[in-house]
Length: 269
Length: 310
Ligand SMILES: Cc1ncc(C[n+]2csc(CCOP(=O)(O)OP(=O)(O)O)c2C)c(N)n1
Ligand SMILES: [Mg+2]
View (cartoon, rainbow over the protein chains, first blue to last red):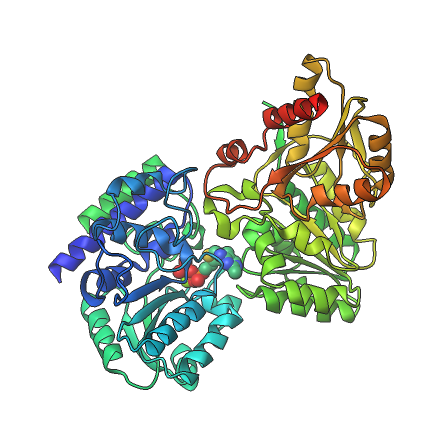
């Protein structure tokens, strides 16, 4: 666990550096999903960075595409591409696009950025696995604001209808979107009961606690006949005091001074 | 450096002015009210502002319902989501019965920049232009934006107004915007350059480059893309040797095609369309992308010289 915590720390530092250098990007929702993405790539998923198209690999769809700095950092740390790529994020003529693009980046499974579309894509991957008699699993990370989109709920019914038990969705429940809290904007509560009513197995965990996350992933693995939703309670901007729980840090780059402060806080945490 | 102004701020401020005199105005957004500047209106008229969250189809559908009960509805979000994610709702819910909904979208074009393809609306003008009853307006600076918003609130029926993210150079002190009328910014007899949005400033720059080479370019601002000013196009065809259209948008179906439709049926002359070709655009700064996709003043001037040499 100590090792995972150390990785999470390094990923958070990457996120701050990348977004500072890019001059734009989304720190809040990148920092909130660090432990989730680190758990998946470092412990949970079967994948081969040197053979990214290995047909039996587990798949990860980042439906909340603006959180991609986290995924880029983790992919670079698991050898999908050189670390130098990180420092040219969002620049013209370079591979790391502002939102995930599966044709330009090894390890990216789906192009996203228009919110609400990833669960359907993950369903398609899980269905293909069933058709092909493969046992790979499909993971998809959804934002709690993103779940405003009707398509998420359409897809949730499809996943239940087709008994997609190789599918595991994670909701990054950081309680904020852009214009306010998810409670103020669309009030989607109660979350757990809603997903249960839609026919899903639901677990609720502290999304910054590796033990709880890994337990939930293993229970999801044992769930048969229906899809699993892990509601991960997180903090938007986690790890940087002046970004935590602040909507203004949804989509803004830190300046040099702020980045320095952020890196210091993450290092000393 | 030319003075820069924000089209989005101009939209937000104009909404407040209109809201003060017309209690019938309702403003909707989809979790982007800070970016679109509808939050200016929200702060002053919280009871007439509704945030639908990340639910564009829901927002546009609701706009149709509100308008059918007599409200004047402004609905805003990013251009790609307003037109892409809610296109059928715009088509059937709004345009079919000519309801009074004004879709004012921001972040049109690749000038949206570093967010990349998912956020760069490069097909939105096409998507809105094909719809019966929809009018399409693309302002090029803050003054024009204000006049456009003031105009469309008085015109019954649906509108699509496309704004961009970056600040743009001041073009007008006062522009006397009229629906269906283009504005000639520079007179010229050699070639006509028609432009919209951020490309108007670039066309004016290109005009200077061409002047230095002895070429007199006529520069036309085609802010009213639909209805388009057919008379201005006919005159340009008759009085100059060719037309170049410039847009931060795909050439397929945008301003270029709107002008081509008139040229082709009424007065064929050589015509070049500057814009995004049918490709996948990428992340980058606004300036780098304009360079890469051939949208700078320099590119326009070069195309103009090429057209005149043929
Ligand atoms: C369809 C669509 N509408 C709007 C946006 C603009 N947008 C980007 S992020 C965001 C808020 C996302 O909130 P949430 O899903 O809670 O993400 P997180 O808090 O994890 O950053 C919005 C509205 C978008 N990318 N896609
Ligand atoms: Mg959130």
